[in-house]
Image 1: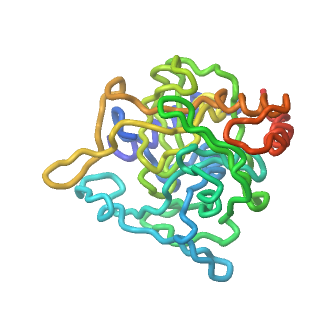
Image 2 (image 1 turned 30 degrees about the vertical axis):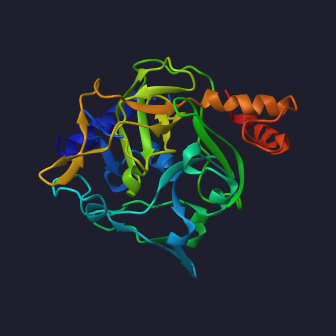
Length: 313
């Protein structure tokens, strides 16, 4: 599918959805760079997502933060026809802003308090002008970890983490989310994150394939390693409906190099998305004074619950 057709398809999906009133490629590749998207609603969602970087890959010099990146093509041994062949990678996971100082991501992305302290959360790692790779961002767009509030990682179930940042985020609005278990088969989905560590990609054209598993659902999202922790949005409402956590093998070999694994929309294993309803249990336990999952003290989670409660539907 040509790039212009991809853009048209994405915008048609979102326009029809009307937000205010609407690891692998499944079918066609629907991933778009920021500069290819003109819909303000999508750009606003993307503006509140982050890339997770190792602390040692970021060097702050004055008002700028330099990002250590590498060639996507060389790092992954790609064939020249692979999309985004000329781009760079740097992020190891993705996340989203769900409160003024709280990031939501996958549990396997931040496995301990020490790992959290060694992670930086970067806004704006994106291709905003065609051909211009992001080698730096304003230093103000880089945040550290103050606290790993809670996490859970079940191999075939829920996989999530909530991180309190070292300060409140300026210039980016917390995203709306749905903690009710209301996802249904066929619901349209959009994912925003960093596939293979690439600059921000927005990908629509996906749907829920199986909403029945406990703690997660299966979708045909165009996602890769690096998308782990990405917010998965309802294509009709623009509200977060889950966290991308697992999926099919990303690449296959072709003539000595690698290309994306391509599956029919209803084929392969699908991509697993943690249901946000799986995160409410620790909150409820904290409210009752019980120890939440993987959190030493209940008080911080209860504080978070009170902070987020006004946004809950």
